[in-house]
Image 1 (cartoon, rainbow, N blue to C red):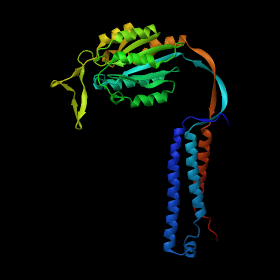
Image 2: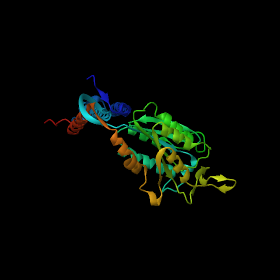
Image 3: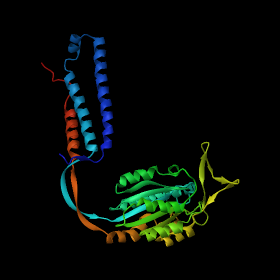
Image 4: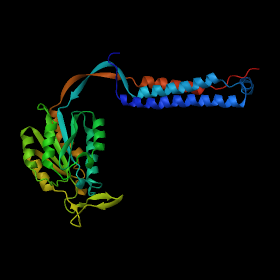
Length: 341
């Protein structure tokens, strides 16, 4: 089986549990033997418990442990046996630039701004049918936390772990976010490319995000912006001090943070894309998922092409079936011998 591969080798870690169960079983049998030896002699034990079969006890435990091993083998997702199928190759790469500055913790989007953004991105992942997606986290500087990938589960895990701790410098630098997003595409000039900046638009670093968006447009990369937060009243920025919830202060005044739509509209205009708000009562439908379906998917469909893809048959049902059979056998075997007349 030269084409043997596994979907998730990391699941082999559960074999440690199986090994621990083996040790526990061995220890249990040893303790039982010592307890019985202390209670009576071997001949007397045979008289007192004539129908108890130690071999059957060993066999039942062995069947259970073997079933556990088979379950782990099913969990790692073995595949072998190649077949070919026609697939659609999508040629749209997306780079999400997510603002992780402290102002994104403000709770004026039905939840925190950051949670709203992450919720939008998760919904987008459910709609993507192909192509690659990357993630840039930015505050005072920008970091490519997930390069372009078509492994959406890995992307989802990276997204969950992304937060204010992902970038060490405070503030908001929209220009560097776009610049880092462009670099993240690498050499993919043959594909349709788009950057989506998700932020409250409060640029505190004095850069030139419109100029960076224009450069991206000239390189064939469309720049969209999603504004998150309340543009009218705004909200306080929460923080935790000594285990107590409080709010960010400046000059003995609580800091109110508002979403800046004008900045985001200018960036989108310079980048040849569009601006849309998210998380407002009158704009709930304008989520990232909506933007993808209405504006990006039509471009993706125009660039799709067919190709033949080699795949392997999933064989996880084989070890799963073995595990079921072993457990059924274990349940049918009694620890007692049939009584003799």
